[in-house]
Image (cartoon, one colour):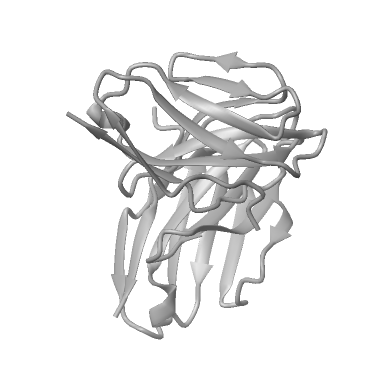
Length: 111
Length: 113
């Protein structure tokens, strides 16, 4: 079972920041927080991941609370192409560990 | 230069047939996975192979048989197809060491009639 809780849907205006929350209150010390998204029926696309420090890449920023029980994915300037289902996943270190997907958040970016 | 590629993209077949889906990755990863996404859009892991060895088998009917001829390939063979097998099947790969993320293919949409 997924160890994360996300709102089922969110809306965001084009050009504005999209902030997607995720709760993972039972996260273990060796578990990372990963974010993926799935646009329509394409394969899930990796966005970003982190352990305890905030992370930023060309796609997004990841803010993890100090107690690591929740995190926020930030898309700084959402575009229509960012409309997708966003999945927050916790996964232990070790590349053979499986990703367990929950229901995710359906983000709709509106013009 | 596709990282994880699956063939075919679409597969339509009749109940009772046997079919295979192929997956190849050119990322140099040592672990590969098969995921199934049903009509309700839930993504569930089916199998995982590390260096050609099966390491995850998630309560999948034995009509499904993965085969990994080398660490860059993980094929999925399905015997005696049933209507409930209709879904999108995604292949993925990752590197064992560290926190390497999974990279997914674009899926194979299987329709059983």
